[in-house]
Image (cartoon, rainbow, N blue to C red; front, side):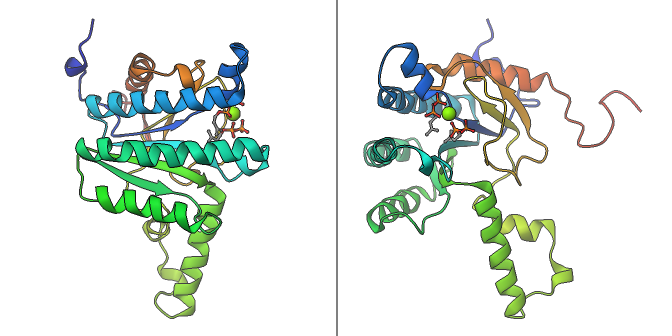
Length: 246
Ligand code: IPE
Ligand code: IPE
Ligand code: MG
């Protein structure tokens, strides 16, 4: 058996992003209410954050609530918000003690002042931590993120800070919520669905995708490690030639 420490650092993903999907189906398979799946999903998140940090992953990004999830029943939305608040309140001290930096991306203008303050508190408390960055995509939609970036750049042009011909890809990246964070190397989606659902559209230009059949509440370090193994078998060509050819 390969020990964690034996994992060859070569081609090891620095940034892993996860679409945590399948909470409802996990619950349905057990004749439980959907809320039970979301609750167990938070437990899986705790396990995964610890496993990722132990593996030496530098950035872990998780999709926890999308801009489209507002179309769910009010009671479910309320419960998901409650879980986030609880996670923030109960876990921030422990994450901080493990030197994990927390960053939250997504729209804040339609969140309550109280919640925004909590998110800012987490980010501020952990801002100098260096072991791993945990990016939580909450109330996040990639098209909304890009639209905000376009607006910000349009304002800069309007103010005469930049000319349109000076706009570069780096300039656009700097306006995203993920500014300063390297693009994901590996994106994992659980529960067998094979789509992005409006997640990190700009940042995933050259990300490797791994789809696993397990529902999110069943995710653990073994599933994470096998997704990483799959990633390490891929040949990332970035439009060039396969390694060993040419
Ligand atoms: C993921 O599980 C959690 C969120 C999207 C908030 P789902 O709630 O989407 O579970 P399924 O896909 O219905 O099984
Ligand atoms: C994506 O899952 C959003 C999150 C995991 C937070 P969904 O369950 O909302 O995505 P669709 O509706 O199946 O595309
Ligand atoms: Mg789903």
